Amino acid sequence: MPPKAIGPYRVLETLGSGGAGTVYRALDRRSNDEVALKLLSTGGPSLDDRAARRLAREFETLADLAHPNVVKVFEAGVHAGQPYLAMELIEGLTLRHYLDVSFNDLHTPTPSSRFPLTIRRTADDDFGSVDSPDEEEDDEVEDDGTFGLNAFAEEAPSEDLASFHGAGDDSDSDGMRVVDPRRAAPRAPPPASRPATPKLADLNRPERMGKLKDAMLQVCEALAYIHGHGLVHRDLKPSNIMVDDDRQVRLMDFGLAKFLADDAGITADGKLVGTYRYMAPEQILGEPLDGRSDLYSLGVILYELMSGRPPFDAKTPHELWRQVLETEPPPLLALNLHGDPQLARVAHRLIRKEPDDRFQTAEEVYEALSE
Ligand SMILES: Nc1ncnc2c1ncn2[C@@H]1O[C@H](COP(=O)(O)OP(=O)(O)OP(=O)(O)O)[C@@H](O)[C@H]1O
Image (cartoon, rainbow, N blue to C red):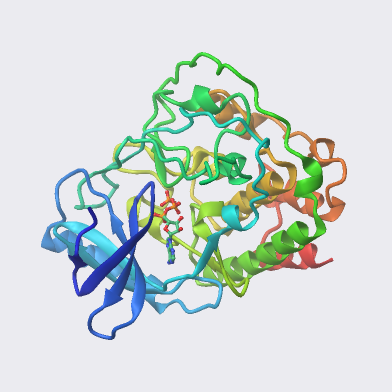
């Protein structure tokens, strides 16, 4: 049951849940405006006054940001010891659903395709730990039983789906997650059936490609803006990008990763904050991040939305990290012969291992996408 009220907000309905908490449609009783209210789930101790003040400070930066492609954050607060964020309510879809081809045989749904998630104490926080529920979340299985493109946009896209599950790390395959790279991840048995091959013709539909390119350009504008303010998103992925009814893109969950970890994305107990599939090599290594790490994540998004599979695909998180650090991804156009060559070139350059070898700025990516 959702809470009836959170701070000065009346909760109207649940919009969705992610790795870090639950988002509600809520009414600001002071202004009568509707907002999206994200209540961060804390499995640990509640926030004390000092921590609450720090939370408010962390989000002052966000509240100052104003860009048509960055979700507006109005307020941060604490409700019954749980931090919450009030933000602009977007009537639309996440990028993964917006570009969803929604047909039955893209993939065989695999029930055990989720990781448990734990968000632990952050490096310099007083906020306590946050453990998400371990229950399965099945938002990739559509109401009509179809399995959409999003299924491989953020899940292990191949026969590896099940083998990630229970691999021994504190993570979820969709959402903010914390990963301990030092922990060994035993292999799980292979799933019973292999997934069907995506229908590439559907991926390449001109209307879909037009939407993809337009969304990417708007994400570049958002990234150029936040990078210009000296900020890094750190957890860019299709579910953190929303597209409204007017096709206007909003970058979401910006600042959350920073709130949960230190400058290198490392929590107090040595865990990485981020989302496996989209993490740049330097993020995996716990090195300092800059805007080019977000550009890497953008490249992974572009690669998988064009090819139907991510650039690196492994049976365990450790194998995934090894590939990200050491191996070259398959040429996108070998996976999708009729993919757009220019977009494929952009994707490959974005996912170069060395930040110096990538595009250096979101503006450069914008230019390249516009060619
Ligand atoms: N500002 C918003 N306006 C409208 N709907 C929103 C807004 N923010 C989030 N949502 C909805 O709530 C859902 C859950 O969001 P949330 O940020 O908790 O999860 P996520 O992004 O899918 O995962 P994670 O938090 O792990 O990154 C989203 O998928 C989206 O449908």
